[in-house]
Amino acid sequence: AQTPVTSQTCVVYFGSAYNSNSNYGVPKKIYSYKEYLELFHEGSEPAEHLTLDDCAETALSMIGNAWFVNCASSAGTEEASASSIKGVLEDALAYICLNSSDVPNIVCIPSQQDSGLLAELVKQCKGGINNTIHAQGFVDCAQTSEQITANGSPDSTKITVPNSDGCLVACWGDVVMDEVEGEITKHIPASIVFSARRAEQDAQNTNSVPYRSIGNLRISCKGLCTSVSGTLTKCTCRQAKMNEVVENGVITLVNKGNGRWYTWGDHSAAVTAGSVDDETYRFDSNVAVLYHILNRFVAKWGNVIDSPMSLRLRDCILADQQDYLNGLKALGCLVGNPICEFRPVDNTSDTLGKGQFFFVDVC
Image 1 (cartoon, rainbow, N blue to C red):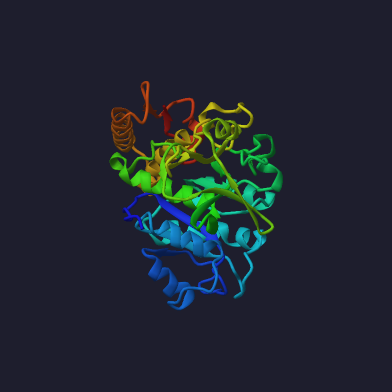
Image 2: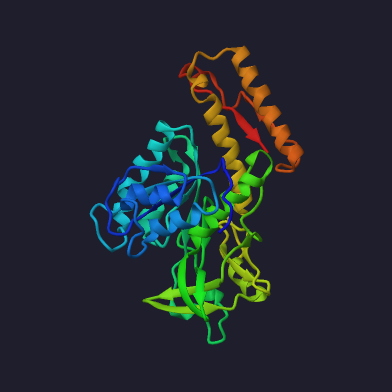
């Protein structure tokens, strides 16, 4: 097992715990898999795993803690429906903001392609969390039998992102966690592994700034497969073929030989067949750093900025934010001449009269 690292990137997982409706809809911050079992399974390993169980076992072997939301309203052996997850999503994320010092940075909902649920996830991730917080969503592409050819290579034309939005990281395939004599014995959705790996990498970065893309990070696994109606099909994951997959805004795995597996792809889901509407959302690291800057500003000044504004307070906010942007530039997280401004064009007499103040980071 890997040695977990403490991460300031807060990851929130939504899914179902096997045969358990314990703590339904209530986010729980958990520090070990043993603690997870105590909270959701009365201390015993469940007979089988559903998505939340896989999230806990995997993530808590890589990072020091994560949040888990059980979306199963009744004890059972089926995954929670998209409507069940959608029903608790907004309140659960707001609960974390209001009842802890954590800021949800990554929201992972494995193996869900429902358009209504994903639309709500996008809404929450783009500033909807407690009306202020931005996050990246990790989701999975649908899997079909046609996606892997007879020789084990993926057919990139058959793989599409479930929602083409820049706040989303779309993952393809199931990561093979274990196998015996060539037979797959454990596999889980890629979004679970990749979201935890991103948080693990963030913790190793200077000041935990998420400037490192999810792409090209070493993964401890046995390979990649698809799971369609109980049928497992292994993927060879040769680099040339995986390049074709990631050009469509998908993150997956590449096989570099000798048992070395790496995450592959650095585009957000907004990149589809080589095009993107807003260049801000081309790379997942762009989005991660942008949201990091926004969330830090909100966390530090969110309460103060509602106080009566003065020139002294305005100048204090500008100076502090400029120092922070300069620090990010020194780390190589930003290029050019980042600047924080309080512009007259944004702060008119009408907006000021309403008590609305707009600070703009130009990066």
